[in-house]
Image (cartoon, rainbow, N blue to C red; front, side, top):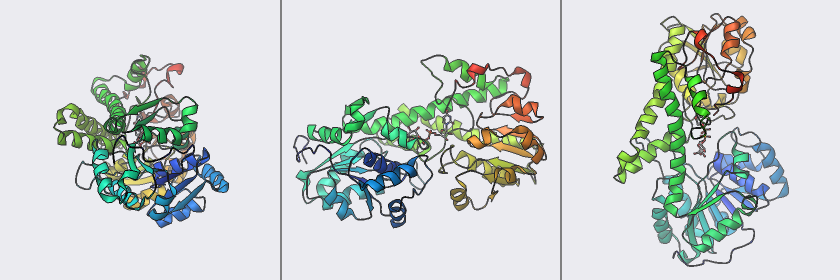
Length: 468
Ligand code: UGA
């Protein structure tokens, strides 16, 4: 495979395959088909493929089931488990498989990425571009290029590109159809033109495009997620300082956010970040930097991780404090299990970590989440679950908000007060109206905010200034 060769003509509307149908791949496949491309979704998991083929999304993502049904009806989207079919079908193959944290290590597990690339390469007999979208350590694309060369019987027909993805769960459809930028990591004019053709409708509406080399494209993704994680841990570090000084991190964040250079997005203090991306990405980045001999450059990411984990312990401390200093036998209602609202994803979920720490101190813990119950029960069978919000808080000594679903944010403190035994609430996400709770007779506490309500002042217009 040469970097200047032209493997073939650039079709006006290339046929696309999407390998891996998790949050990223399923959304990408559906979104591209909705833009008029012929798309084949591929996964090794027959159950997932059957569900998607029948119009069902195997995870919770607002708007995706409706769009899936719509595009299936157009015939533009099909699903298969066959790599033979994929290799024959696609001009551009998007590899969207997971790169989870390796068991017992901070590094990323690349076995699924390697297998997807090489399984395709073995079978491709017409000009094709293989595009990585998975989050990988910098240098992976170069290594994969060598693997492709070895695996393919027709290496002159293949090229590799990298196209990092920045979608957020809960907003996956809109982030895919209207991304804030596209990044193409390419090594040839042909690869760039193929990607331009594959994203034509998105580029036509003026979406900013950065065309880069492979290594920069790989780095953009981990650099972006590291920045976001650092911003969250920064404000949570300030919360720690607020806690010992009696200052209020909510007011602090609000005042900082008016400086355009800082901004209010991702400055929301609280329980911190979780999910399948931010935590494992910062760890894999630090690990990779050490391998490259520049560990010091991102050593701060270890601190970002440590600050984030301390928030979970501090939340347990606050609940214990409100429970009178001892959690044994105390009924604690845990609101939320997903790592964030509008998702059923519980990977590295701060909510479940806290619930399990409370259980470990012999509290009588009950968990409720509007969408993530099935996943939570599977991974945390040791916890007790309520079927409804009301059942969860009924008889509680302390309520703790762990995931800021709208259902919890909009709940009436008066109504809640009638169900609980102790009107004590820890707002782990700074998402509730403290005044309303206090007016209804609750003891309201949040990380980084003083217990004394007299010191809390936030004007109405400042309340929406800091957001996730
Ligand atoms: C994250 C990035 O935001 C996406 O840009 C990226 O594409 C994605 O990872 C990925 O790598 O695939 P996501 O994992 O869906 O997206 O979740 P975020 O919205 O980033 O939230 C991450 C965590 O941070 C959540 O637990 C959330 O509760 C927490 N958070 C977020 C805060 O604690 N404070 C904030 O101000 C913002």
